[in-house]
Image (cartoon, rainbow over all chains, first blue to last red; front, side, top):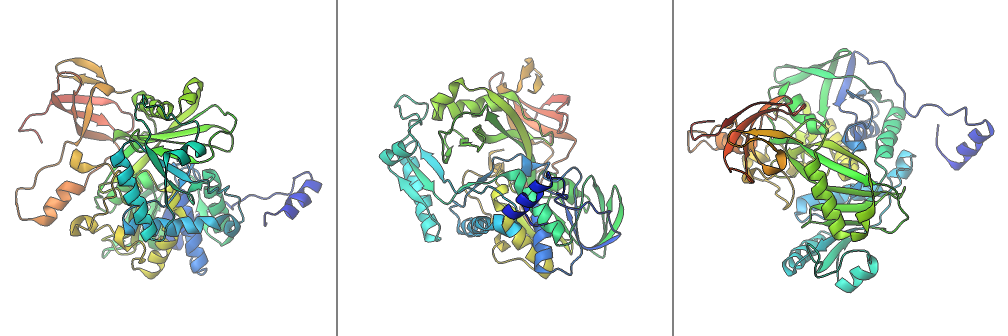
Length: 417
Length: 87
């Protein structure tokens, strides 16, 4: 069923009793061409693009919990492409461009809003550094502007401009095409669109083993039985190491906690996203009025999906330092997701040493914005069994060849360990 | 909040400590084996379960220790001083 104003009106006449489920719940078949492990944004979107690019493929998505119950429903919904390194910039901007028409393509309102992301500078060297980065953006045909302090004051009058602030503000940069989207809708929209193209979405189905013959995948063992398959795509974020272990593969990755939190809802006062690299804190206001606050990782390996108080205190103090008027607000919810932190801060997308086993992971703290771009490139990689040009730099073997993508300020910085 | 039992100071809250990463890595003996060195620098077991890791009591006695901690429950099984011979 197509969602439209007409369908709402038609169902309203019938007291909304005729709506059908957004995606089907088929039983697990015994054989598929491609099995995708993980029913988050990346897994569902990969399945959608696989079915869209080749509708003869029989594709299944196996999710151990429920659709969008992991990081897709836990992130802070930021979408941007303000990366310095050309490989990153080109790839993330490809993804940003796909976001633009995704609501129409999926026929599901993702509430994508290009309200801009502002990065604050707190010193003259900060201004130089971010100006360099935003000039690099322009060289890659990506929008980015350096804002004067006066322009920033007009745009964000509530920031703390006092010289006595913890980190006084000396300027800012902005990517105006950056924005936010409703993350749950992304999972549901891709699930519905994939299901309409014939993808089997199997929830509550845990993968327990991957069977290999002559260094090529043959079948996958699940809590609902064995499934023969020609190809497997891993899209499990923080659990990538656990799945890779099933085939004897060790990944350049650690799993860490990242927390986020929202305050009680207040009237709209913030119409862009704001990040302070110095304070390790970023803020946006949701459509419901909550102030959504995020920061850095807790800093030690964890699969618990449960953060601890010292980090919350640090993140909140950063937010109050930026916007002193937040001081009186109450936190309504805090939560944590488990991040697949690679050793250089860039993702891993592509082939593995096992034939017909592919990985899309290592997203560190920034996988949400990459969902359409990564999934589309990953689907092509799986179909063609060769790297997609846009994601070829994110190969797993870069850690041996030395072609690391060490965008500053990302990753879990193993050289500091 | 982790409560880490420092060998010298007793149980102390986690924000007095700094994390030092996986304590099971072994420096490769061969100097010219590039692949072994790359694996040592970048690859991690990253277990969902018990994990031996370095911590230092940065805002306390500043000793380095090896903590065996569960990465799902955050329970701590054992703590020992990190010495030059421990790997």
